[in-house]
Length: 129
Image (cartoon, rainbow, N blue to C red; front, side, top):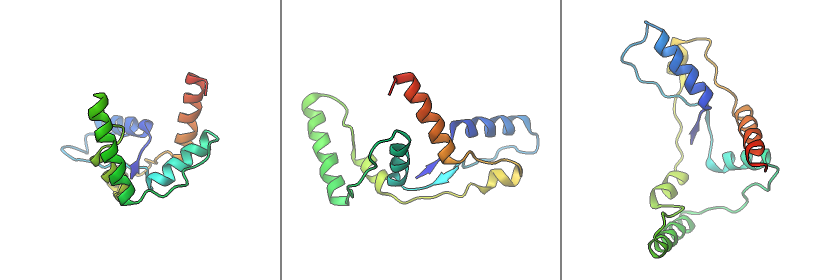
């Protein structure tokens, strides 16, 4: 998946609004391309928890989303995992984020580790984790 710090999104929006050299353009903002397993492992490390260790195969993902659909139907609650989220989690995608940097040479994305550390610290403080 592709991940970007919300602070980078805000900085990019402000840069684009304040410039006259960019008009009617679309930009992909992506600070890091990595798998969900890699992301969840990094988040677990930030929270001092055991990283994910079980491989989710396509068959297992299909069973889980179906189980969640049945459970949701019975309990009348939204399923935790859907067919779409299972498919998205298994997809390997990456995006080219260089277009913004062609317009703004000094724009740098916040390293993912730095973003995760800040977010985990804020969540630990707010929710006393």
